Amino acid sequence: MTEHINTTVDNRLGCLTIDRPRALNALSLDMVRAITAALTAWRDDPAIDAVIIRGSEGRAFCAGGDIRYFYQVATTTPLGGSATLEDFFTEEYVLNHLIHFFPKPYIAFMDGIVMGGGMGISQSGPAQRMRVVTQRTKLAMPEVNIGLFPDVGGSHFLPRARGCSGTYLGLTGHTIDGAQAVHDGLADVLVAHEQLDALQQRLASEPVERWRETVASFALPLPTAADIPDPGEHDAAIDRHFALPNVNAIMASLARDASPFAQAALASMHKRSPLMLCVTLEQLQRGANLSVADCLRMERSMVRHCFEHSDVVEGIRAAVIDKDDAPRWNPAALDAVQPEQVARFFEPVWPAGAHPLRFLD
Image (tube, rainbow, N blue to C red; front, side, top):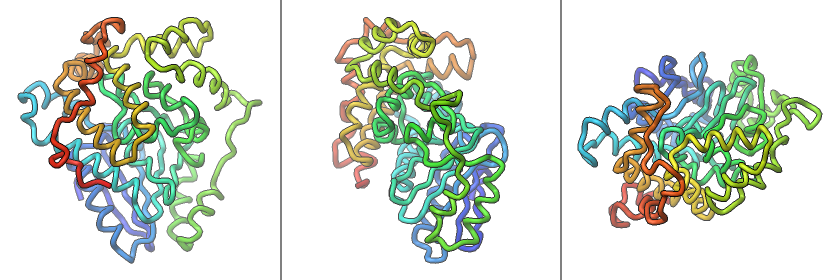
C-alpha cells in the first residue's frame, strides 16, 4: 500500500484506513490506486466477507482530492499535457464505480469532514452499503466554491437525495451534519463517534449475515421536529426554491424570501462562479436520468472542459493558494452566462470508442 493507505484484515473483515491527517485525508493518485488495488483484491478473495473504510484519528474521513496538486499541474503544464492529472480523474472515477457495485458489504465510517472525493468513496450502491455518520460529521459537495462541479458521481447521488436537497448542496456548497445527511438520504445511520471502534470490533466478531443488524444496534435516534436543530426544518424552502428550472429563477426566488436560511443560500451562490452554477444545475438535471456509469463518463468529459476554462484554476488560487477569497470569475455575472458556454461543458471530448471510461457498465 502507500504511505497514506493502511490495510488490515480482522477475522474476515477487510479494513481500509486513510492516513493523511495533515491534508485532511485528501486523496492523491497513489492513494486512489492503493484503495483500488485493495478493493479489487478483496472483491475476489473468499477469505474477505466485508469491508470497512475510515479515516485515521483526526478531523476528517476524507476532504476530497488534492486541489493544491491540481493547481500546480494546471499552472505549469500546457492544457491536456499532464498525464498524471488525466489519470487522477480517470482512476478516481473508476474507483467510484468499483465501490458503487462492490459485491460485498461496504461500510464507510464518515466521521469528521466528508467532502468531494470523500463522498465518492462512501456513496456506494444501496444493495451492499452502509454509510455511517457521527455527531462530528461535516458533509459537503463544495466544488462550486473553487469553480468546479460536484463530481465523483455527484451527478448520480445528488439528484437522488431527498427532494431538492442535492441541488441545494451542489449549488451552495453548504455543509450539513450527520443527522441531516441521514435525513437527506446521503447517509444511512447515525452512530456516536466514541462507538466506532466498538462497532468495528463487533462487525469483525459476528457473522457477516448480521452486518446490517450489528450496525443498526449502534444507531442513535435522529432529532425530530421538537429538537433544535431539526433536520427537516428547511425541507419546504429547499424544495420550493431549488426545484426551479434555472439558476436565475432559483436566485430570484431566494431573494424574495427574507428568511435567514434563504438569504444565506443566496449569499453563498453570489460568491460562486456564475458559469459553474449553471453548469452544475445542468449536470444534476441530466444526471437524474442517467446510470452511474453514464454519469461518470459525463463528469470525466466535464473535468477536461473545466481545466480548459479559467474558473477552476482561479477558484483554487483564491481559496487555498493566495487565500484572498476574491476569485475573478469569467464571466463575472450570471446575466453574462450564455447557453452555448454551458453547453460546451457537455460536448464530447473523445469519440465514444476512445472515452477513458468506455468500459464501465
